[in-house]
Image 1: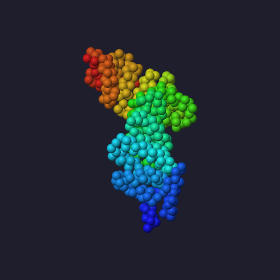
Image 2: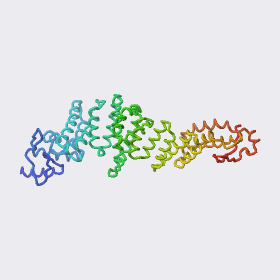
Image 3: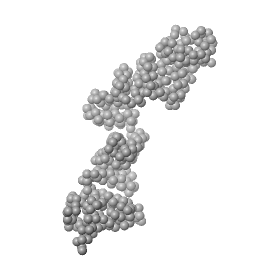
Image 4: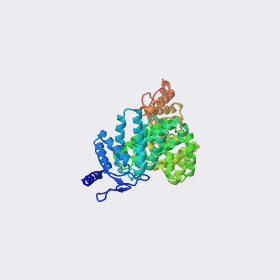
Length: 461
């Protein structure tokens, strides 16, 4: 009778994934009397197998009050018998902690929880799907929840870092998120951890981007990665860690030592762009090195920015034109074309300035900056007439551009309106218009020369 009972219990327990001394038990194998367990040799009994079956069934049905007793029996007497001890243990101990009455009892439970993770690593850390790195992530998450008095979470940080390093794109998004929370908290407490936080941000950002772009991942996971990526971007921008001098201190030697590592150079450039350190010498060095290896729109734009800082507008225009040819992104095209237009403006080539500003507007017609630039080019550029009164017609078309800028771009409105108010003063007077045979107040007038735009005759009074 005893033998039949044992066999029945054993068969019922097969669904729980029993593992003995690294061997998965099958229906054709006998259950050994004892299981070798490194420095321990717990006795495997019918009682142990029964307890595994009991707590697993109860936990599945969220009947934790029934599960807690047999779970402890299995955990204490045969901790390497089944992965189920650990997969259900978190919920069972969580329930017990929530129902504990005293601080002493809560302390015992949370310490048992930490011990549970250690034993899972000991006996099941080589599991392919849930290896040690995965377990450390879960352990850190529970440590943060159950040990709130540890403000800096130093130990949890180490576990989270090991988890993200070990799991990579297989990391839980929540683990990556918590990793950045703890890293930021440590930096805020200790400014010497600025470099650590920047490096952690770069690592987490890279992993989240890859998860978000992984077609094999679930859509919910990809979306969650995008949400968390935006969150940590905002955290990083607001943290104060992104100091350009500190960034240079950290990455100068990295760029010098990796001048042929395109992937790393691009990551560093992206980081510098995100924190608006595009004028940094280290960013420039990374851009030039990356551009030599494999020219891209991003590297060309970086080289252009470097040339601008050095005062070489001609070289900067060449680089921006390269960037323009290598991107399919309309927003980037609009930006590169505006930069070219601005450089031509600084070089006093007002015809080309207007030409490229107009091209930029073809990709984004709501750029007040382009209309302002054209207006200023009209004012400063060569005058179309020998007649002083007719030359004041350039102020009409310039103010038209300023008004257009204010109308399409709220961010440019204040500056555009100021320019419009300032340059209306230079309109001809009613008397000037009256004595000019080519002008009639309120009528259309085409400004000649290189401008060639039609406007309305107006006076300054």
